[in-house]
Length: 238
Image (cartoon, rainbow, N blue to C red; front, side, top):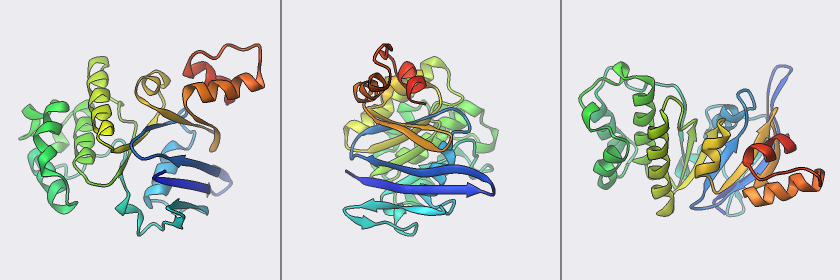
């Protein structure tokens, strides 16, 4: 196990965005955080990354509590819908990522090829389309060294072909031991790429495990139901 989350909660006034969220993350897996828009996925990632303070709960690794100051040693957060260094070129951004974050220069050419970024290297980041920007954010994350990468909506803005190519690239990095924790609201995309799943609804974890494990949980609730797909399992458990 790489790290675990225990009893994490976050409120915004009267709204409970996260309530007693607990799960664990294994080394080298692709873990999917699955839930509809508004389920609390981005809030959870921001709390894990230390962008937002949580109200209660802990992140633990090797039996020790890991505070927000220590978490950058194990995880790197790639948020959705941002345009970092908008006036700079993509080439500059990749070089800066490798330099400032002590990234991995040996992966630079591979990541550029995997994400089809070669023709964009001279373009200012602020001039890129939504799908192009998404691939840039993924490249920045993949070039970092932290053992766990938290990516919010990795396929947002990508077409079907790009989604499949990006998914294959992410799986290749996971096969080398990188842990990928992906927040995904499209259940079909999650089912194709993830090894295990954390099901989140209304700020609460409704299930955690592989598809067969979650299907067994759903069947325990409704023996007459059919739970062959992740979508059916999610609806049954949430």
